[in-house]
Length: 339
Image 1 (spheres, rainbow, N blue to C red):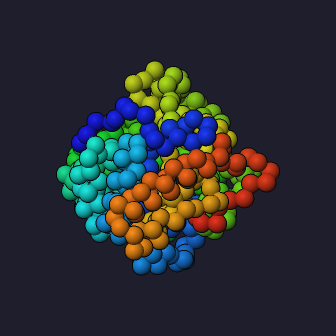
Image 2 (cartoon, rainbow, N blue to C red):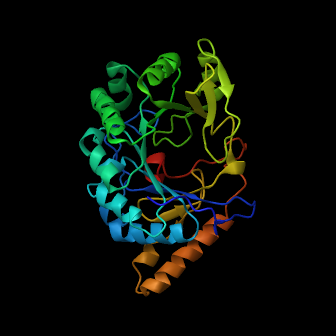
């Protein structure tokens, strides 16, 4: 795996933010039905023929890396539902000056594929897990797969996909009482725990500010049991990290709604159906799939991808606007955009 390059990224927006992180969705489909993400009967999937092929994905990612991307996060939906996932990772890892590669997953298949993904070039994983109760997991996800997630996390650790970051969303009256137990369990099992504020990106339109568990709520609850000391350096990371009881262990809080970190954002996004987005909450997308499937030469396609990347980056707004009274959430849910 190549080292991160130190030269300046060519993907710089009008506010001076250099973009080095590309989130790539491999599919919008998911094997869970988390209540804060999609209804239990959700089936409005992207047509298979609209998804980028592996060759198309690797071409687009390759051009992005040539222009300054140094980290690629594979997302979904659930990226492990893509059967050629190891081939995708190996292809990214084979690029000149390969980026660091990570993956966000619900971990249902992780025990089965963790070592193969590590061998292909994956460096670490983020796992979504909102509860330590198998019964509550079933209620929140509509699937009885809690123990598969736990086994997946263990397999990732054994394969060296570390640090394993575990992401938890707390919902009022459902699992918000689990903040302290989750952190205790994370400390005991060498998980890097991060709490994420629920965001207005669910397919069921259930998000409402008055019932959201905020970063302040989470921090105050944790401080009933632990001493939290801010980690002094954050950079472009979405999580605000805190040393737990003096460290070295930390816990993170991603407060996209109440403590926006847009001023340091270095992320661009590619959806599974080939749309570039410059923000998770962007209302606009730019189609790269049509370019990839045109009659242009390979050289012309690569130049077109570069131009799209530049244009999308330049058009990035200073912030996501969630707290603007006129905010309108994206038409597509999180599963279609890519987490």
